[in-house]
Length: 291
Ligand SMILES: [Zn+2]
Image 1 (cartoon, rainbow, N blue to C red):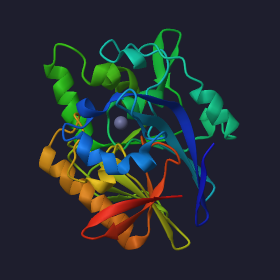
Image 2: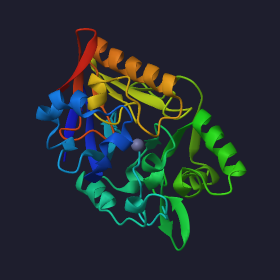
Image 3: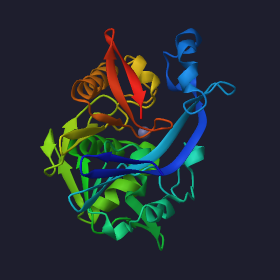
């Protein structure tokens, strides 16, 4: 279990899966063998499997404990969800809740859930199956959603013949809203004395990043503004799921500049081990410094 200390705050990685089965050139359209060759030394084996030409990506949540409160950032894919268009996420039965228990917390002790965006691998554990119904997994939490993303996917879901985001909007977002637990945020927002939320659009229209500050130390939870550490070296590389190409690049560069300029620890959702890194500005670009 990865534990990180940021001032008086503790962040614990809650793993759902960590697998090398993402075809690299399909994931990053700009992937070229000659461009990644200089990076194999640090990428293999925790970030890339050269035998399969596959990215090794984690899907995890960050459990933040600060000021006596427990906050979960991003909630993975979830169990028992019908995901016909993503076979490896279909009807999953992971040990996610057991891992949360191993981290010393019960679902009813979570005070807040923050989703950096509303894709299926960031909202899944918002709900769990209870007698055939999707109910909030964290019944006492306030769930913070970007209103821009919510409005975007609500409109798409109404228009679409098939449910959007592999079905996640209907089974992992709407039940939380219907239970009255959602707090919609527009623009930058101060969540409490330690946490702020800032728009970082591009990957989705309403993507946000979460900034944590405690006792002079900082961290930035970047959601899918970056998927893989190779994007620190190549901030111009978008993933195949980024919606607005130019905005996604702009937000990525903004995150890297913030982390290199302030010393904030980068806390991604999908990077391989050791899962977090500092960012150093070097020669007009950036390099990750894993911790
Ligand atoms: Zn994701």
